[in-house]
Amino acid sequence: MLVWLGALSRSVYEVILTRSLRADNAWALRDGAVVVLATLLVAVLTLGGRRKLKSRARLRAGVAMLILGAMTVGLVIWVVYAPLPEQRAVSVPPVNASPQAVVRAYVVALDEHDAAVADTLWSPLGFFRGQQPWEVSYYIRVRITWMAKSSYPDANDLNLPRGVTGADVSVGLAGWTRNGGPVGEGGDWDYTLAPIGPHHAWRIIDEGMP
Image 1 (cartoon, rainbow, N blue to C red):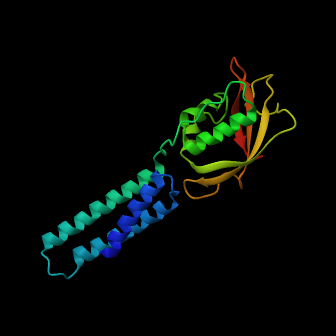
Image 2 (image 1 turned 90 degrees about the vertical axis):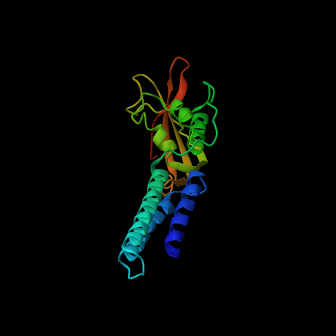
Image 3 (image 1 turned 180 degrees about the vertical axis):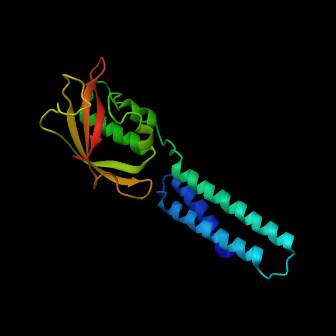
């Protein structure tokens, strides 16, 4: 019983840590699995044990444990898949900002989980449009360790409008994903930007490995 209560308490603790962005959700998933096994084990021992309890008392105790365990597992599932809370609002760079400044603001928006700004800095022409809220909920404690703009303009990306020349910005990303894994392909990532709209503001249209 003490082990079962400890598993429930630790699982709730991991939920609190994850929602406050003090930990990724990898431990929450493991703790959820432990809660399931511990709940089933304790329920079986309670319902089938040779204790001097009436059958109805054992049944009520087992059902209560199953309900509490199910509620805890549901809480773990919610914390794993629910969008992360926005930490603070991020400022949108001015329309004359450089591609590097736009990428820098975009990564800050990912770190702070500001979905509105992340979506603003992503061009509607991009192939991955509509995925910014997912990305904002995927990264935790992400930051840029190095940045380099390519020495030549990019005119080959399929997402570039005809006649528009883009720019590549390569960065090194450090941090973690929600499942505890590293960010990007070893941290090396590349963004393609294009001047979009009436002000020709640089906006991200593609991303991936350099």
